[in-house]
Image (cartoon, rainbow, N blue to C red; front, top):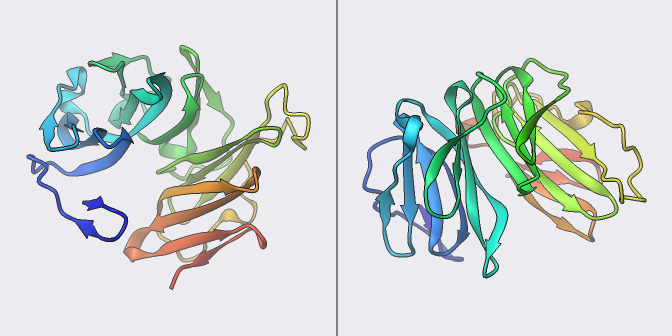
Length: 239
């Protein structure tokens, strides 16, 4: 499906494989990933199949563009999937990338190549820092199906990870130059982000207003959609 600002229209993908993730950095630089190692690329006109290297026998569950730019356009992408497989696109080809785990990886988000967060099975979250992966402390055994965050200068990087049984985790990471970040040692917090009655929180995305306040939307099972209300720090069902 493609949204043109007014309505959704279907597109011919050229595959019957189940597609699990999509991300683009420009109108003619979009990737979709899915079952059986499927990677499709969109050039602004049509979709075509890409080679996925060692991903051939693994489902790819998420893909994200990272901040390696040429002419202001993000050129590099990271894809994650079953059995901890990670693939990296350097602007011209895909190759296998070092992984921190053998567990399934579902979602990823980042601000640049040195700050990429990956969520996965059994409450695992990893942070890519340069060429190494750091395992972040977790407080749940629930699988986490997505991850999204905000890069708010001076107020810390805020990261959200939704998942199984309506679980929603939150973390603030403060940089060394974030003078106004309140708690540089804070880890993951469940707090008020658990959403009762939701079987699975599958994906989250949003934006930042007033330089520090995050507003987001959460997609779940059974067609449910939630909106994060900064004033009350709660997720509310969208009618």
